[in-house]
Amino acid sequence: MFYRPENGHGLPHNPFNAIVAPRPIAWVSTRGTDGHDNLAPYSFFNGVAYDPPQVMFSTTGSKPDRLRGKDTLSNIEQTGAFCINIVEEEGIGPMNASSAGFPAGTDEFAAADVTKAACKEIACSRVALAPAALECRLTQVVKAKGENNFVVFGEVVGVYIRDDCLVDGKFDPARFGLVGRLGYRDYVVVRDYVELQRPDD
Image (cartoon, rainbow, N blue to C red):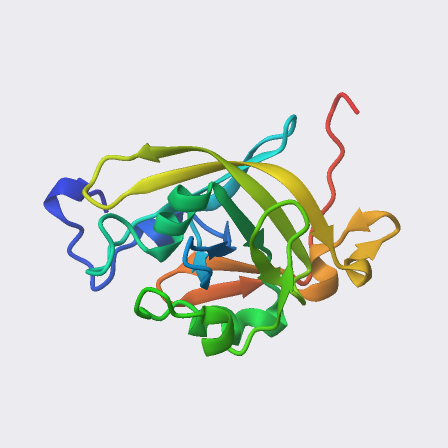
């Protein structure tokens, strides 16, 4: 089949986000100027540069109690900081629970029963048991086409890695079951992978 998105796809569910998959999940923690912690997952997420290390994620929705975007975007624009927590298999349930549309000011750590720990480089909490967490300072927010689409870029200024996730000096996603988004309501857990040598290695 072929379709033009502007004309619709005619399928029961939008295939676009299932085609661009698997996608890593940024379980983003922030803190507002009111001191409330926020935690929410975003699957339009990736690294964008090595030196200095930088990441991006996009938020594509809105809330009636925010001027634009969601609580995450509002907090980041207020404070200039956020933390990306990596999701493991054991965290699928709490991650999903934290995606609910809570009112502004709700602490999703508490609502989803997630233990928090303090970040070192930014004034924010992180998921204490996450396999890894990236403490970030905002570099820019880009308004994407569409009413509620915003892309957040940040520089990674601190990296936390859980010790048991390192195997022979490498961060091993199969060790803890890294979770990715496939689209629809489907997720994938990394249990194995293939290592390739580049032609010029």
